[in-house]
Length: 333
Image (tube, rainbow, N blue to C red):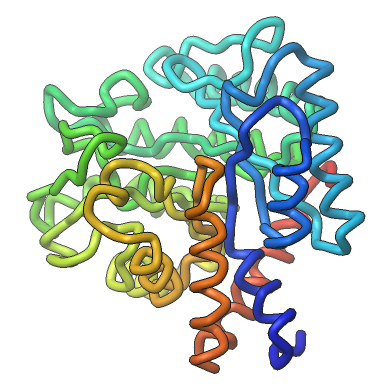
């Protein structure tokens, strides 16, 4: 892909964005995000999702908009973990959540039933499974995690990954390198995990298993880990996203940030800094889940950064190659 003309750079920048939309229709504002910013993905929330035919129609309209704009197939994502975090309301299948999955067979059944719902509706990416290990009593993830045993989390998590991806739904393991030791909600503010590098090896075990399983995506947490990087949260850290996940652990799939609108980032960093750090860390998809001016600011800033630094253009092209490989795994586009 040529990268010289400004339009190509704007395309490369746009493909690195996964954004939220406001309502239940692919209205003019939603279409503008796809047509003008050429975003790589859209993530839908409860505010966007109603009865099944509406959900299916919305996903279809968004995918069609990307096709008409001449873009690669759109990543259409949702958080469908079950339990506390489930965006699809009845009559879609309702799941009790990871703490209630106690066997590999139950994990496989969840993946089968969840994939059936998502594929019917038109989703091709699920922001699941949670691979965090709640290793403290008051862990923020206690009600969303499989188990406090890293081995059990690895076993059940990889069963979900395999089951989703065998059916054509991209799985995204979260929240790397693990937030099970934290008690502060990163939706509100920026937590710090004081675990030692040795302790963090336990947290990393399920993610290593997910990498070995060929998980399509890994989502970075908005947590500072001084043992790994004293300055930046994982979602903005080259030391964690590039050096640890990609280089040391050998991961060559999609790397995603958590939502930049969350308090952990929004209260401490401007979006331009977050964009710079994401590019430096070889992040593929930057999530901005609230429709608004931040999307345009990040897109413009990233395009300008690409124009100023040929090395970033080369990295962006490698990111596009990773996205192309992920898109080949879709059952529906």
